[in-house]
Length: 115
Image 1 (cartoon, rainbow, N blue to C red):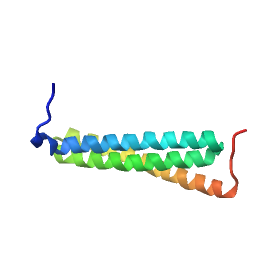
Image 2: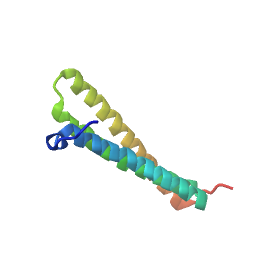
Image 3: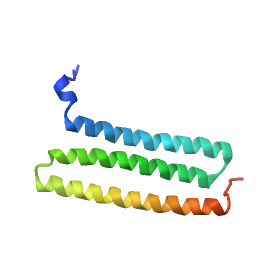
């Protein structure tokens, strides 16, 4: 059985993992909320907006977790891997922000429903 000591509770890597996990939970919760909304209203545009909101919020949490992990980076390889992950997440966040703005613009023009 693994026991967590008080000193381990305050390590940066544990908090980074907790924040990462919360980001993943946030994405899943928004996707479930969008699915329920889609089943109730049949409004695809609204469901897509909710999903993009969740992905953006979740990526913010995951970015914060990744930034906390930078405290423990000790080699150039680790730093380069961090930069690659940071770039990918930044690009994804920009894409989903663009998609969200586009969907909101479309949603303001005409509602899209499923028959």
